Image (cartoon, rainbow over all chains, first blue to last red; front, side, top):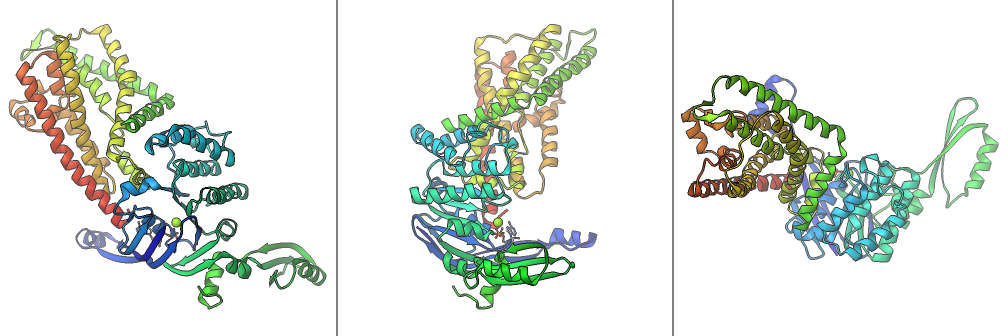
Length: 310
Length: 262
Ligand SMILES: Nc1ncnc2c1ncn2[C@@H]1O[C@H](COP(=O)(O)OP(=O)(O)O)[C@@H](O)[C@H]1O
Ligand SMILES: [Mg+2]
């Protein structure tokens, strides 16, 4: 379904030096710095798969999604999706896909949400019956009846995001790209979106790529995980393996009564939380406590250090 | 086609949601009319006509070009804003022609402005000045056709300037200059009749005359049968030339966007 071979995207960034003279020089000759946003990435995704793309900020996730959705030319390599070369056959290709950019909205700010959906019905020439069916199903699944008649500018971030997701799926695309659809949302909203994406994948067999920097998103939604960092792929495989190793490792931070801090790291697969807690409580007099799961950065550091291999 | 009409309808609805802006627009139109009347009434004090042009003709020219410039005004920062806030990407992800979509949204806005700004202004004007009636019903129809052509001429000019946002940080300055040039040379501020002959000759070789002045002359009956046909052909000629120029910049700009990533 999706074939990506040795794709690269280097951005040229004009370098600016400070000062008047430098600004004048800049007018005539420009120095460029090259930013390797995506540097030789390959992968292939089968129909109906739901793949999580995870990586820290600036890893190249959005750049990859843009190339897959046809709005950015790769500098090298090939992309073939459902028989199309996205950036060469953009106008035809985009009928078959849906894209959600979490940081942006495709909805009309001033009109009620439902009006933006209506417009999409015409844009994608969705038959009335199918449109009504999809609209009803999605609004129920995402709990949107309450605010569907409200202007988009009055919606909360979580409501707007749900609106954007429905907007990308109304025409029943075969392939959907989500670029950080849970960014900035609270736990409840995140959960709704995760469940919905999971459901759509299971019932419609929609092929999906999902980027995030939240490990929990991946755990709950995807079966396959691709980790990218600094424009290269550093892990491609099952979620379970990463999960057993990392999500089950916890770090407990304690603030003691005497004001000092203590840390305790362990893996719940090896020792149970109960045992650890009992030990800690008996050894220290604890004022406050917090439990953390490893951040994506730590996982990546571990991969580099050879803790896990792709 | 249906989808583009929907864009126009949505834009129309959009405008209705901003009530304050709407009332300010009406007040603005009325003030413009009052100021204009005072100036030209003073200029015409004691004379019936200047160079054979009567006050009535000037007033009619003014009211019509005011109405047309209302209908012909649109969000000229549209493309630049889409580019700056990054929403151009979601536009490129839609199976619609972005240029047509823009055009039709602008038409929706134009219709809104005609109904809510221009019609009230004409009604208001007719209370204290006499306007020329059209020569006959045929002139009205021909004028209507010429108005639509004039709209496309101006729209293409604006579109060309808008596409420069792919290379410039802001087109606002150039847009303002363009608007001043259009206001002066297209005859909406000072009627083309009063231009120095040499300037008028020069303007006749530019697309500016084809915007407001051609339809107004048809309305006033200044042009006859074959002259009307000729000037409409000129309008169509300009539309095609400007379209090609706009399309050139648009394609280059989009190409730059998809290659460089904005
Ligand atoms: N249009 C652009 N021009 C120049 N550099 C860019 C552009 N877009 C992204 N970058 C740079 O490319 C790198 C990857 O960006 P991006 O794909 O947005 O990462 P992510 O989505 O994983 O956070 C970043 O260092 C970013 O600064
Ligand atoms: Mg991103």
